[in-house]
Length: 462
Image (cartoon, rainbow, N blue to C red; front, side, top):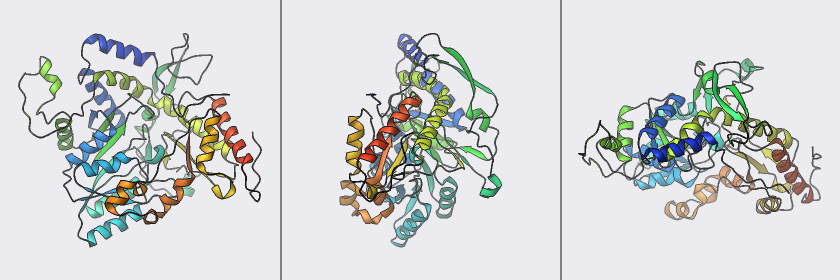
């Protein structure tokens, strides 16, 4: 029996060597490696500033503090998200106004957001910001959010924890005008050569394991191809501040970590100051020839700074981001192919005007066709050695938000209806085609074994 974890990070000799060099340098906390990682990440996202912190939660908190969120003010937050997106609003005494999602991609429903804003304003509750989350790595309705924010004078703080890389199209060409058009990631067109990576010949899909000498593979980076495409924008382009996660299972990882990106000088300065106790200058400079022993506290800040040890990992993960994306996209395509004919499974829509990060591969079970529920399907997969997860119990269904704000499941009906059906399947760059096939074959077998008597026949296992 194969053992396929829900996720396994792809850490190679480059990251390991950089960490060792950092340990030997004697500079372990925020220092030159962190500044390098910030510079390179800002360039990758085409942003003026990138502020590295110890989690995406910290980045979101600093972003809200930087825009001046005050107690009692409302912030639009999707209910289909992790706890961090809303809890940072509560850190500052704000009120998260939860919004429903679209059924086809689970992203924030802009029309419902507008209804919630109008309702709040009618009750004389101020609304100052909106925090879209790009579910699973597919950019949501960025243009719709931008138009909504402009209409109601809202700041946009994007929770892009699932995205690196991800892009959206800024033009709105009719679908028929795009027929047959090649999307930049399907497959990449010839372009500038990117970084070189060692791929072991015995296992061409395993990345950065350092097994044997390997073959040096050159590839065209998606980022380079899109940098000259005027209508393709990286995630966060329309946001005042966009926030990213480097948690262990994210598209690129530093173990723990996050980044806040912005083009606004004042926001960047404020986030840097507040990320380290409100110190008036970059603390790491105090220990170089540029700095001084003297510093001042100008605000009651936080201990959110990032370390050079983590940055040593991040520098090389970022350089591999487009290669990781190629693998994730290929795995997602295989999943979609193998599950396309399974009537008992619904796949989320992949928008043609998006380049999906494929951080998550989420399916919906058509439970009306099965004799078992989602929990039993997950249990059967686990018995077969396959790790899964669920993303997520909608926020409005958690005890805190029910008890504090009086939410009921039916208040946000789409998310509440979808929740019992969703399962997240394993997806990580080191998965092989055989791994993906095993997951799909096992899922199909579980479905066949537990069909309702009147259920439609399942397509044969391929």
